[in-house]
Length: 149
Image 1 (tube, rainbow, N blue to C red):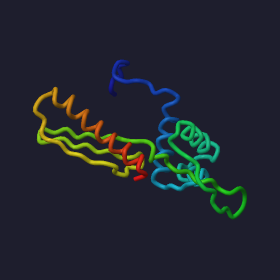
Image 2 (spheres, rainbow, N blue to C red):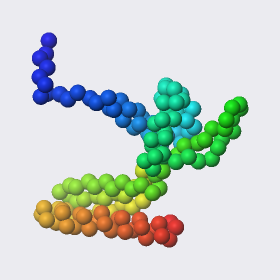
Image 3 (cartoon, rainbow, N blue to C red):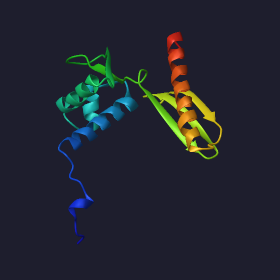
């Protein structure tokens, strides 16, 4: 039997499972959108109230939004949930000795801009020029957004 030493592990907090459930809910909404709270609860194999609490937290953080109401056979009309991806941006950077690649996407994974640059020469170049490339991608997004693209 292995010996467990206190310095080799950390005890999870009570909030760890809640955080995992939030990530599961967020990913399911992203993959299945539009999805109702009831459908989300079924897919997560949890109660509607638990799914509703998670969704309300995600809405409160601005990660999820409510959309149109659906047609329900009985009971209240379901309200569809969507990921708020268009106003959230992700910058991915792949630094290699052969060159660098920069990708700007929204939270849904839709590519907004892609840029490559020459090989890395020095550490100073990485810091200065690569940050400039990221800034340029973001400026391009702001410019396109202003034009409605």
